[in-house]
Image 1 (cartoon, rainbow, N blue to C red):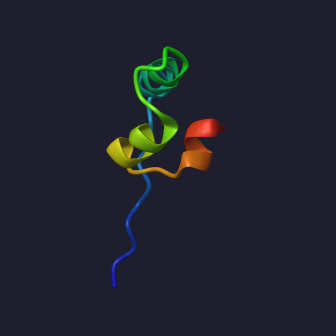
Image 2: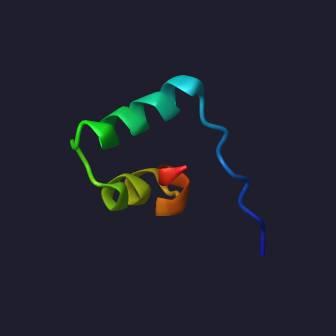
Amino acid sequence: MARIKPKNWTREEKTSIVLSLLRNEQSAAELSRKHGVSQTTIGK
């Protein structure tokens, strides 16, 4: 089975995700599903 390489997020992508969370536009659960990362990663 091939191992999937993790995505390297740009600073702009990270900022956009965090701002979306802080503005209550989407929940951490929604953002984690949308971007394929864990909720813990969104929280960090």
